[in-house]
Length: 399
Image 1 (cartoon, rainbow, N blue to C red):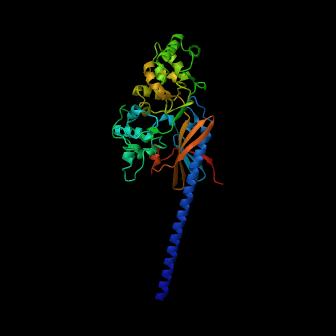
Image 2 (cartoon, helix red, strand yellow):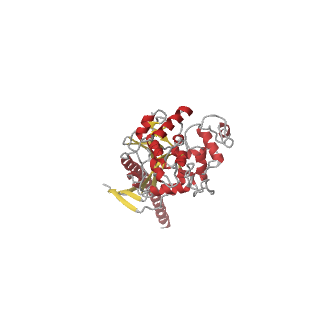
Image 3 (cartoon, rainbow, N blue to C red):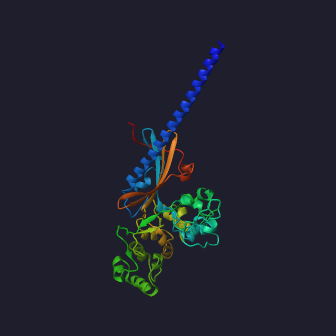
């Protein structure tokens, strides 16, 4: 009898053990399926974003556009049966472009002198470092040695390879304020490595070249004859212009004439500019990184974003903006953009999957430039998203 009970107990234990293993394997299988479904949900979100962005027409890009409200800043949950995704689209031109920002703008962004020198050394050719920067000689002595890139950053996380940058400085709010006095924010939330804007007039035409335009064409565009003559004289006596800001410093320049000049002309004939800040979408803490753009001017710009600024000439309606201040700011400003950052989280069961895509919009076509899978554990917090969504949009049901 005792032997029989032992056998029964042994068989029961084996069955329980087998069931536990089977249950564990079943749960693992469910988790793998949910992980794949979460990935598909995120990809569905990207497709939804592309469908909206391909109808974006440049000149200008504002908060009134459909892309800006899509997803309600990640507060909407789009559901299809048992999977869902949330999303946010950000104008890349609303951020500081680390590939082209100069020393002053980087300082206003809140970077230390070591970070500035090291970043400039990383992205520029040459083998002689700045006083607090670094080139191959420094990186080759690390435990895992590598060379300085001497080129463009491909992703903002690449900053972690550069001397002076740590995860805390990239993802966390700095303890000290930047030089503008604005509330400090993590570099991750203020910067990008890709931002371009088209060189178009407010009516969508290619801007003329200020270095080749005739005096007659300037007056025909609306520039008073004396100011048009002063522009040509400055060009003929001091050489071609290298900045639009320099055009605004010619004798007799008025806000009205300056508005025509910056709306209709450019330096050179390039189809687009890199790194300009869109006054329609940039936050105050990004705007104040621009030299001569004070906190008061930034706040006045932000107050107008709900209605949209259609052309840079309208900047002269902003309190505090003069021809002199515009001359210092204009080469870093735009009202357009053609690159957008799409952030998405897909969810299925308890599985979550995040992705970030860089999308270029040109000629009514949305093209994915690159897609990354952020590795930060809590991307919702890093992106500034609320823990829970406030609205559900049902797109369909499972078949």
